[in-house]
Length: 54
Image 1 (tube, rainbow, N blue to C red):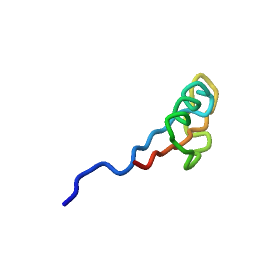
Image 2: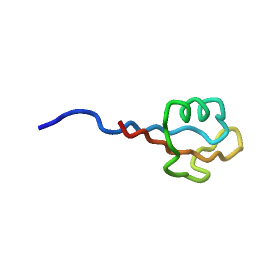
Image 3: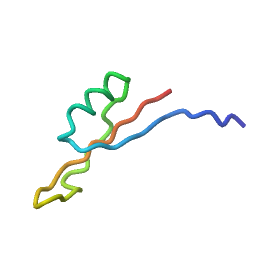
Image 4: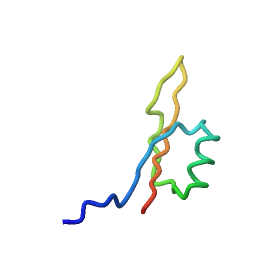
């Protein structure tokens, strides 16, 4: 059985543009959006789901 990793997944807040830019440079693609799933100091944030197929 081949136990090699085939995909890496990550999540980040939508307002974290520096991280999103870096992830895209590394080849990650946006795969989904979780709307208003994080609540911090009275503000709701969306979460972006990203993946990289190896």
